[in-house]
Length: 271
Ligand SMILES: Nc1ncnc2c1ncn2[C@@H]1O[C@H](COP(=O)(O)OP(=O)(O)OP(=O)(O)O)[C@@H](O)[C@H]1O
Ligand SMILES: [Mg+2]
Image (tube, rainbow, N blue to C red; front, side):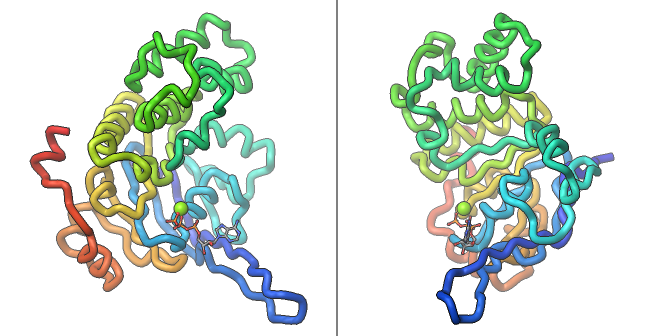
């Protein structure tokens, strides 16, 4: 039986718009009452055009921003009612990978220190040797050799930097990875390498992904199920196969008809 890692019900987040002193208060309905589940071990793709609320949804899931209303269960635990201390316990189980690895990696830290930092904070009793081994092993799994441990982020290519960000996201052995446009800044050839790495890591570490992207061909490549967002609402959730062969919602049909260029299937398999 597959269990739900995430059960989200009526998640809502509105942001106030500053319209001046005497005007009525307006809000941006960034996330406007959405419900979905993410099963343990699956990749749930979240698509939709810019500003529809994808990143806000991701940030609500790991508590980076508080919910206005709704319930959020993580492995059955109601995080919408969790205290700060409880969030501290759960947040390491949910890690984020962002679009721009250069912005998310400290420029003045060596990559071995970037990876060790979360271990120093969360595993105070782990020996130094054990930490170093975990760092080396994980970087190796992510395709970065230990000969690069003393290098700084700027010494790597964009694709390598994203490998390092992914390794850092995995260092605390999380269960959920919230990947917000993780390949959008990369060349298409590099994109498929990173997507394939993410698939391999998912299998090896039994990871669950929330994969956010505006790019349907990327989402098709990696997702098991897909949610389509439109102006703060989730208008359709379906398996990848259903969504791409038999879209139900008019907005999904519009999105599918506007895919600029699909990578040929044969090429995708070998990449
Ligand atoms: N902290 C904030 N304060 C005010 N408005 C915000 C804030 N964060 C997001 N918004 C607004 O909420 C809406 C949804 O933004 P969000 O970043 O979630 O969209 P997105 O789907 O991730 O877009 P993109 O594809 O461009 O990354 C947008 O109108 C955005 O301007
Ligand atoms: Mg976004």
